[in-house]
Length: 561
Image 1 (cartoon, rainbow, N blue to C red):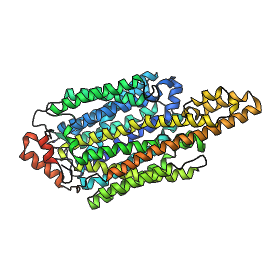
Image 2: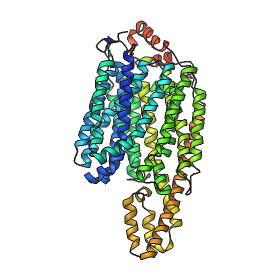
Image 3: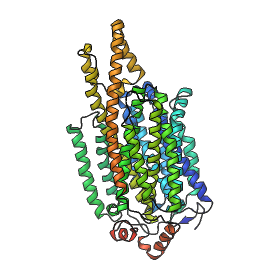
């Protein structure tokens, strides 16, 4: 196997000393792409103040999320055929260009558009690094290195908020985007030097119709989940129309994919029990985890009383334990070649963490929350890389990009779905409980406070305005204001508590699901050798076309076929 990046290969496999430089490139890409989200989040209050775009606040993240999500499976499929290198480079270039444009924008609408463009590149940066690790290490070795990748993600999540605040305060919010550029340049050089060119021996027909229908079918569904419970009620005709339109288009997409010669997402993949079970578990992990992570800072600020900067640090213990969990999980898989028992234990730890969160109340101390976060990090950190290794091991090497990106895409939907569900649960419970605890002297003002989004009451500016409104009544007004804040804390605790019970339900479903995950011993170097033998003996199908016969032939022991 040639090691030179200029040599042409039949596969994406990276061997020799060059693989360590390729791994460094992967870790660098993962670090700055995952850090981007937390850095931008920290700078958003300043950006909103500068660009006067509070009404488009959510779209800065939603536009990025939607374009990156829908492109992940497309990049994965094409990289299996034409090699990782061109799509890795394309993603880095688009991400860098989107970062540069985002930093130069002068309106909130322009920033949203630039973030959508940046997300197209991020789709490749989400899928290519994990696939490239699979090009370097066999499944048995991969467990250890997936743990290292989890550690990089954890470190970036800890560094991001602090770095974002420092950049915004010391320079300008525009530099939270510009800082991506030197990292992107280094990663581009690394990809050019270390990743091989892959030769296409046979003409491959790109599934343009399937790609188009996948994108246009997913966008209305993602919009529906983004707007449901916020811009429109769940039962509004706009919400129903978005979901119904997306479902109809995806149904047409499935019909087209069943007849396509080389579909972008092969329907027969879902017949593999390891694949389908891992996807379901990935969605449940995302939903259980988002219930904990997305709204925990709301509780920490609104009930415990920490400011926004310190509440952001609540994630640090969880990320440290996430690193420990992912590295221990990887070492166990590498040494034993097994993963099912580890999956069951990891999910059980996740259930324990969500149970502990349901015990939070108005008097809970900050240290208790930190302990709960550590337990959650251990469970989720152990389970997430495990699912990825199990899926990659279940299919031939030539299909790794396709199955990897499909798993990643479906798993990300868990967070997309969870966000509006948990938001609706929190708001509904908050409105109900606060009405029972507001002082009766408020009169008509009580109804207005009941309708306020609880997150809108947590900013210092909002509380100052509320205090000023009550101060006109003198000392009695100040006492009334303190009673309102107590009612807010009680209602917020009740809302977050209900939210964690929903998260616990998802975690229990996740735990039960691990018992249905088939065991297949992790492969060593034979994983790559099987591909070489298949390529030599069946040149007509060595790209991994999604013919049903190929899928059955490729099914591993324990896949449930």
